[in-house]
Image (cartoon, rainbow, N blue to C red; front, side, top):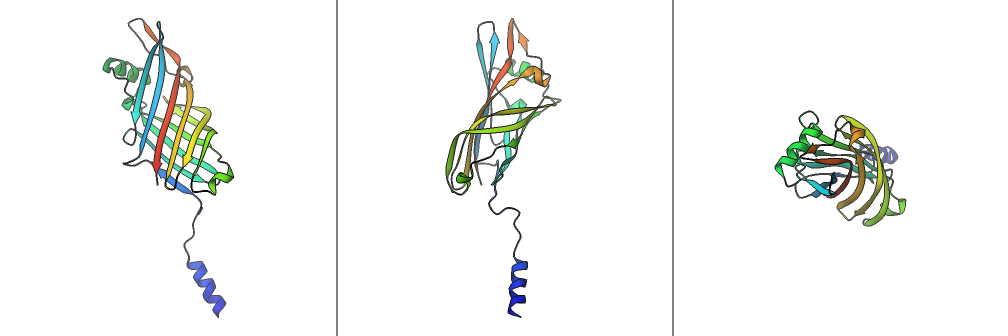
Length: 193
């Protein structure tokens, strides 16, 4: 009889999918930016644009012993360069009325096992792979990230390059300036549980 009572108690405990998993979803109080750097010729004119979290840059991620999974999105109309006319040309080239968001899906981010056992850790050169969906086209992206975890926060910083033509985007031209096809992207965020 005592064994059946213990079995009943055991079976009534809640079942957890992965007790070691942590979820990080963007919300008020989180910080983050998506920044791009493009070069226009002639003259090597640097064009930088930025979108801020949590209104225009959002994420929903799960950190588990298997790695990091989830996705991040940015509203393309939120990217601002500091010049209204340039933003208008950029939105036209990106066709933001048709493709309002860019989406990054984390495909492979494997953390060293030694880190996950600790409440706090940092990796400075963590390889990642994912899929970037931009302008209705999906392409594989890879790079390295600096990632750290504190008791309740996950901090991510990564950089990668995009080629506009690979996404069917025609680089904008205006008044003799042509945006070059390569764009450097930096993603930073701090997410609290």
